[in-house]
Every structure is written in structure tokens, then in C-alpha cells.
Image 1 (spheres, rainbow, N blue to C red):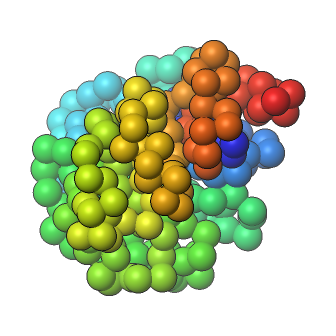
Image 2: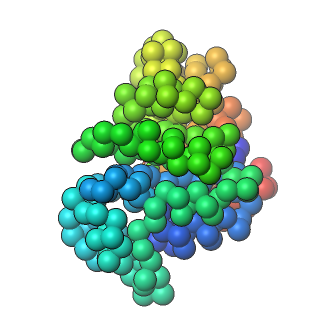
Length: 240
Ligand code: G3P
Ligand code: CA
């Protein structure tokens, strides 16, 4: 089973920061995952929530700030004083870290509360500019966004995110169409996901931080896990 660093190395570094990405780029991981939103002035930025409240010293929602305004806040100190000074990364800054490496880059398009018209196109433009179309997987819980990625860039790997396993998943996959399925840990054990694996789908599971859970996934055909506990999971899988 492969290891994808979830939001960078987020157990030890503030999630979705350059510190977290640089730390995991030096480890023998297979992939890295992070989340993107769009600023008021149409820059693609890397942050998990719609709002900056939880992971910065500012308040408000990403879409209401320009990039320059967002850069004024600190995105590291909430996690530990030694990370003070971390800025919100742009997609380009993160792509730059992984360009030329063997690490797959999973960009998750966020649109849980707000819609960002044009976000998929902007993400694809940046990926193409960095010549990383073969290195990325673009995923979303918003399956209309996944379908747009499939239409605009059929050669780019896309993935549909599922919090719950759905019945008739193969039929659904044809409609999107999703090349890979990124599923929650509980849904990974449900019959439709096992069936999708049997039928040849690539399945990756989030978020696996316990050895016991990783052990249950071994030999299920799951391709990869997303984990915050990068070194712990690398060490565990090295032994199994
Ligand atoms: O992409 C897998 C996982 O990151 C989805 O959940 O909430 O951590 O973005 P979340
Ligand atoms: Ca995510």
C-alpha cells in the first residue's frame, strides 16, 4: 500500500503550509494531498477550510480576501511558535516543491460551501504550465467538478471523493466519469468499494493514522492511504 501525506506532513507541521510540504518531500512517500480554494482576485491558494479562522491568526473567508491580504496573516503559529511566519501557499509554490520528484500530487478542489467558478480551469492551467499533468490527481467531493476535470483534461487522473460508499458505484463512475475513488476509512470496508476494487478501480483511503486500521486495509486491494502520521505509517508499511 502506498502512502500519501495528508495536507503535507500534518501531524508534525501546520497543515497545508510550505513547512509541511518541504518536510514530506524529503521522505520516501508516494504522494502528497492538499486542498485548494480561490481568492477574491482569482489566485489558487492551498488551505483546507473555506475560512482562515482555524489555521491562521486572521478571521474571514478565503474568497473575500485578495492574495496579498491573505499573505498578511500567519498560518503557522497556531500549531507551534516555531512555525510562526508561515504564509498561505499558492498552488504554484506547492507544485514547485514537487515538480521533478516521483511524488504524486493530489490536488483536492474544495467547494463544500462556496462555489468557485473557474477554479478547475485555473488549476489545470497551472498544472500544465508546470508540465505536471502526468504527476497529478485532481479530486473533489463535488462530483460536478470532477466531471468538469474529466471533460477539460481527459488525460489527467481525476478522483471522486466519497464520505460514504454508495450502491451501484460502477454505474455512477461511468457517469462522472471518475478514474479513481478516494473513500473514507469506514466506507473502505463496505461491499460497493470492495466490488469497485474487484472491477479494477484505483481506491485510496483517507485518513488512516492508526497502524491497526492500516493493517485491516492490507490485502484489500486498496492502492494507497492518506495519512497525517507520515513516518509512523511508512515505518509500519515497511514491515508489512
Ligand atoms: O482527500 C482526502 C481527504 O483529504 C478528504 O477529506 O476533509 O481532509 O479534505 P478532508
Ligand atoms: Ca483534503
